[in-house]
Length: 102
Image (cartoon, rainbow, N blue to C red):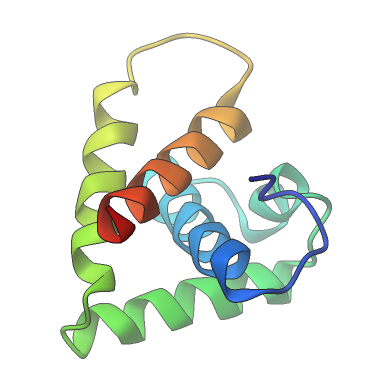
């Protein structure tokens, strides 16, 4: 699954939103930087993704477990020094959503 694609179906959009949220919240990238990592998305797309995930977390949806798993994955790899930040976050986002669908 390529989270950098322009695809807009749910099985791509939700993992992309989770990964964008994690990139913004945990790594501290700007909205513009996060957008650049995810296929040159606009900062407003990233802002929408973060707002959507926060809203889902507050409502107690099943997405909360996905985000928890994603946070753990990103944190466990946080001390790796590399230039592949976007790939690491994309992988964490995909892994988080796979847990829910398994």
